[in-house]
Amino acid sequence: MKKSYLALAVAALAATSIASTASAATVYDKDGNSLAVYGRVQSVIYSDKTGNVSNEETTLMTSGRLGVDMRSQITNGVAAFAKAEWEAANGDAHGQDTFSARYLWVGLDFGQFGSFKAGRFEPAMKYAISQTDIFDDWGCTGLAGNDDKRDGTFQYMWSGNGLDIIASLSLAKDGTHIDGAYANGETADMSNTFSFAAGYTSPDVVFGPIAVRAGFEHGTFADGEVMNNVAGYQNQIKGTQLRYDDYNQYAVGLSWGSLDLGPYVAGVYQSRDFSTSAVPTAPQGTETVDLTVSGYEFVVGYALPNGIALRTGYLTKEYEVGSDKVKAATVPVYANWQLNPQFNVWAEARFDAGTDNDLTDGKNFARATGEAYDENVFSAGMRYVF
Image (cartoon, rainbow, N blue to C red; front, side):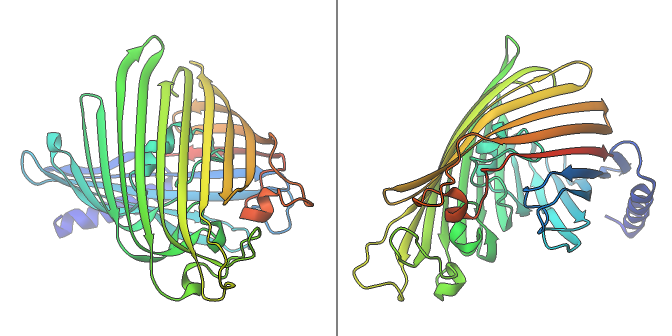
């Protein structure tokens, strides 16, 4: 982009963010170069026992996102593109304001031959498990990988005739978020991650398209000091400290319909299997056991022409070490009213549906994983997008 183009784009970005324009705006489009600005601001009130604040009281949280999409035509068949998106919030669980990059990538679009990008984003597994990710606050109980944004990721994607094929490779990175790695606070030093997903979406059948998806992911944890990999995880069942070596994840999903109008039903199953080994401090001869985090989700929804949408489902996750298991199960209930393309309000609740929470026999999901699902929680919010 020429310097004059860049200056115009930056000025437009500043003006757009200050004025909060009513819709996503293409602020520059000339000679095959374009820049679009988008974002949102929302305020959400959370009930107590949600874990959003340290004192576990009802609270109001406000956050905003700002992003830019850029594209430049190089030849008739090749275009360059880039995205940058940031998020700011007025307080995390420790009362600290936050500002971070959600997505950063740059790539090449080869038209009918697919696209390639590199940067920070979720690997291909996200596509395979996303069909039940339809709630604002209380979904994804059974999905490992939903929040796994990876730095240093390369991805190729091809789409055509209803088919989608995605392959991604993430390079070494310390402190990577790994859903299900409860032993290390769900962050770990990674050597690399490979992910593959494919899916097919049919034309409309009765009330909407039918889509089937599947995915596989393999991650290898970095070698090094034990404390850099596991942080002294204590296996409650065997009394053994474990170190993560690698993991394999499998997922399949099926959906029918559209979230935009009419009925929608979907189901996803996933299993993320961690291979572990005993660390040097473990008792000699102690048997090493593996960890599996699996889950399935079933959701239904209906969207009315007036902008009102209702959704619910049954979401479950199982944490298995050797022959010992703990389970979480939830039922989310969600109502949304899209007053216009820019503004919506919603209310949402998550009800416990049989999560293990016994404090006497070891069957306690929160104690084993650090994730609490045995409390009923509620939220309500309003959002403006542009």
